[in-house]
Image 1 (tube, rainbow over the protein chains, first blue to last red):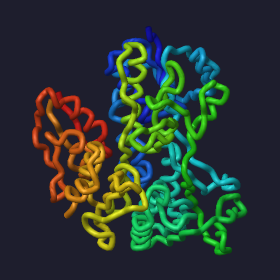
Image 2: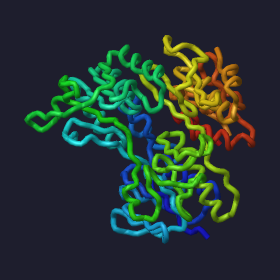
Image 3: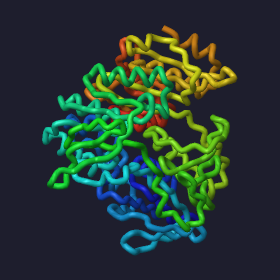
Image 4: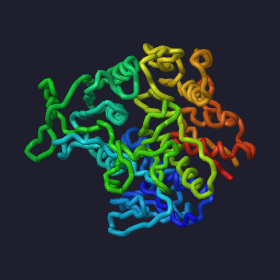
Length: 403
Length: 63
């Protein structure tokens, strides 16, 4: 009998798992451990609406935690898991206490990668509400120039928001295009053009050599790899995230760029993982170990692992976790949505890149339809996602998604 | 169940349409239309999922 389930991580995946457990009929003790002091809140607005002041803080609370008492959970907020013994399912918390559980959901997310030597006043990262409050205050103070290091989602969205506030912005990216990890070259170039068109100083294939402090110790300039010096009093570093697995060292779980799970997100008997921290073989894409840092996946995987955990007890069959990835990014007045996986075999089937309104579809080497990117084409992007879910062919996708 | 969309928040991401096209439709004009304000019981679970997965949290369900 499951009497006690502990969810470690009080953000989207963890909350979703807790809700899923209750909805699935679990009536025992349910504990949610979160290292931040706040009840679960929505992170995407932190780089957009919250940062420019359009979305007030009270609107950030996740719907499922609107009434924290309603879930019937024991909230342990402002407390982190610091160790786990997988064999006995015992969790040690940062306040020194221990929790023994029959089931554990690991949903500790990820944390921003840091640049060595960049730890000084005026340098910001953006992951938590506390980060966002600090960055918002700094943007409101009217910096003379914002230097954004890294043109991934966080960097590109912060650049967009800062320009929207009328600030001068430099966006620095080591790769040849922004969002190079997820977009093909042409789409990446279109993003770069979008930012340039809005007055951002975009520097691609560019590296940062060092950072300089003024006599108060705060940042005053950034020196580029090519020797150029950018005067600035506000630097935002957005160079990717690493999964929060430090607390799992010695736990007995396999840790390799995340918590390694089986195809049903099971990491060990009675232990599942969901969200940014989970790495599992996604059969939809050849069974390669996959770790997904996406909002929608946190919801879907959180829901899934609740069912997975309850099935351990009920003995119900659970299908492998094989989601179609999907994410969005809002930059300026553009809405970017990617379903499935991007490849270098891209064709525009709707609109045109030149007009910055388009949908392109991706195929693999065997001409299978594997992904789609919509740029201010939300309806078609979602249709593409539905087609991917249904295993549609490339021809079907072309025919359905064309202008 | 009554479906209410806050159109000040809605940005026509069309996620809801992908989950329950019987209730939500984003048309060529890029606006969201609610096809059934009071969907039948067999759709309630999907409508709940659509509300959860709305990136703008613009969908509210009233009893």
